Length: 124
Image (cartoon, rainbow, N blue to C red; front, side, top):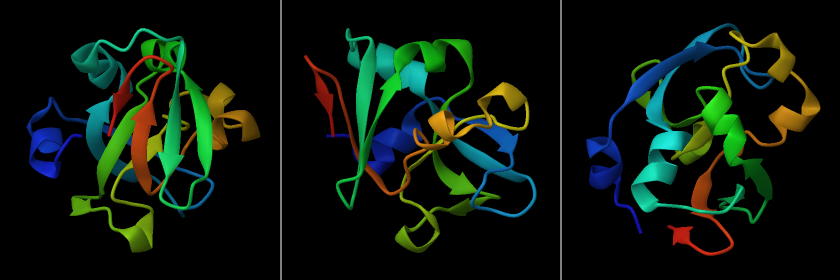
């Protein structure tokens, strides 16, 4: 299990993008999926992103290698809360890569994230 303090101690980056659920472009800050995968040594080809309401999506690790897929805990300098899709929201850089602005990738943008699991490993 990763505490908030441990999460915040990881290398942080910002991604500016719009999403289908927000108006305009926002700045999201958090940890790159690929950095978290390296940190935990996850070996599967995809991870299962699980939300607080048990919604889940399979997120291919190649997405994180190819794009700046972010596990965001801040939007526009403010902590994400349950009310605004937090505490963690998987953000794809839709504005930088228009080819990602499709339902397939939208479904992988899990909000209210509680766990990232792989077949062989789990990071909660």
